[in-house]
Image 1 (cartoon, rainbow, N blue to C red):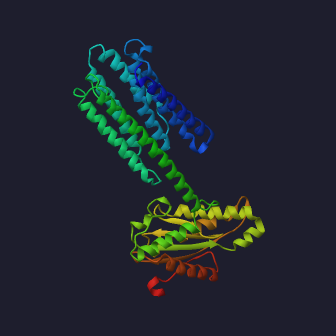
Image 2: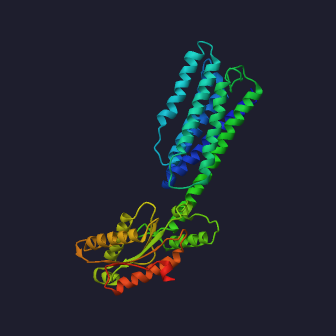
Image 3: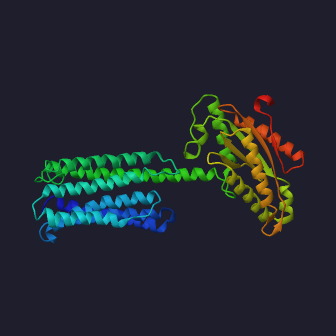
Length: 404
């Protein structure tokens, strides 16, 4: 019995066991349901190893040809794993269809006409296609910034280039790299490449899962559970980053991605607002209605801001809206739109005549990197001026230079 027979058998059993682990974890953890897809390439690899254990099980070269098709399916199912990780649906038909197409081409055309180079080139072509598709998935726009995603994309591109070289040199390389008679070094090189890609992809996917979970955990600590807005901690981090930039030091972006105002360097306008007489709303209608009023203020603040702006809930009924590249005039325009929309929407809540209103303080700075804390102080003073002037109004603070 050849030396590699037990090795292939052990490989098949190992892949089956690891695949079962992915099935169990994916089936029992809803957050990681996509891990079920990870069992597919392992299952295909186990089938390939089993067929190579004893090729005499099937007549002619069918066992080895099927093993080659299953190895191609490993790449196809790996593409499905990447799609699921990216939050996209599976297209298993393509992952199966291309290996089947190569199998039919190799058996009925290449074997009939004695074209081993064409068979090898076709096998490398399918491998290149799946690696290219996997790399393409990782280029798609994502809201999260995972450092290892670029590394995984680069690895797929590297193995795509390797497959392209195999296509170009299929008439010069021995099997399984090309179409010439097999040699020991070619078998070793092919297995080293296959194992290297499998281990590298698996390791990077594990790292990506950890990075995503860490990022999600960090995001949760920066979000207000009632409204979904950024919270006081996120605002304090943003203010701290602005102060650091103003002092000329390099800083790390918050909550896992680049803060939008890091690239703007333009004028900044701050809106500080709260719900007028909110305690009386809670006392008269109860905390459930009070929560609805808070969520309404948050929803309307999100609706009037632009994509580059941020809204924070910094207290019970207190909010901050950071307008980037916005003049004082635009700040007052946004404040008045928000105030009017809230006055109309909060007149009746859940069938109850609430009549809630907002008071807003607006402060603006033309500095390239303004001091957000100083801006907040001026906007807060303007907010109290709005309260003293009768509430349900917006007040613009003097510029920072005038205030100084």
